[in-house]
Length: 274
Image (cartoon, rainbow, N blue to C red; front, top):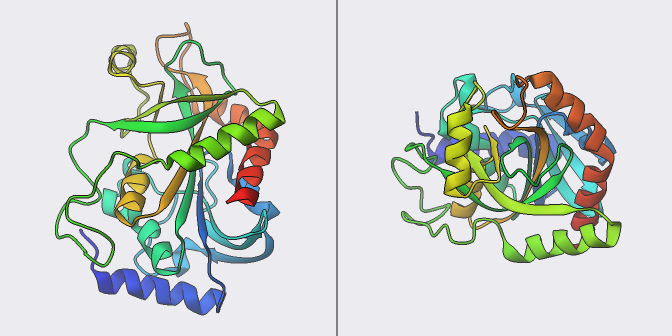
């Protein structure tokens, strides 16, 4: 079911009651195994998703399901420890709901992260990839239905959903830290099953460098809201058919834990310069 402007405003009002006059300028959506960065937020105000009207729970492994408001890297942030996914039974309206709510609270930038399978065979497990574009073949869109002009136009442009200047900033910071930040195209699959080897071959032919089950609905919505976007993928496994072994969620969480330090350092460095 599509949400109304009144419902977005109700949720924003509830969060405003919890955070007072604090204005989050940056919304951060942290992917599988990466939510620990929210523990570094100073003067945190924690709001479980269950307290926010109309917002769905997060049920994926490694996702706490709460907002953490406060200061990180010198910036006022709203960190989502866990996100909603289409494969959990939620619509794209549900998945993208918090982006619009935080936009109403003043957020103008989205930093989005995910754990994904590597399609580009030059990538290695543990690599970080700057998302420069995405591919979404599935027909449904979070913008389907009646347009809400309070957020954006009926037919928004998608040429620069991932803000080029933020991408350049991330590359500069990664270079100064000695990190090998890959660049690539993220391809969205709805899940929850991992992709087949044939689907991975298709993704490679189409230009995909990594595949995952999140991020794209939120980024489309952020673009419609005229938000700047920085997207970074952690390659937690090589995609189906590349290595002679089955895929599992355990390897995703293990790889995310190993990469946590360098990932957090890069995000913090970017935040400080935004």
